[in-house]
Length: 87
Image 1 (cartoon, rainbow, N blue to C red):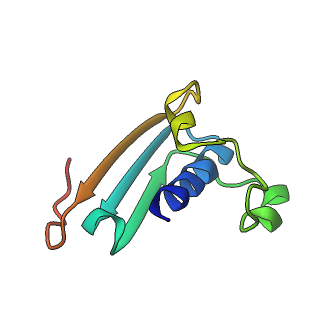
Image 2 (image 1 turned 90 degrees about the horizontal axis):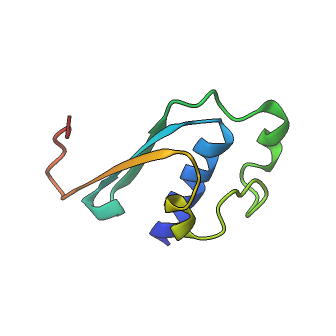
């Protein structure tokens, strides 16, 4: 589901020591999900576990995004055909 996919991508950003994460959903996430961050990348020791469910999870639920992660998270959901940059 969409929420789980976004949570996993944000989890990966947190693993990369990001302090800012931007999430963009195209056509409400049906066409594409884009996540960018200012992290340093996933540590080499964590890479074998990246695709394993809950292996590197810092977030237990979607609500954890708002509770003390220390990460600034911004988002944008674009309608189909409206791919304008919000900045």
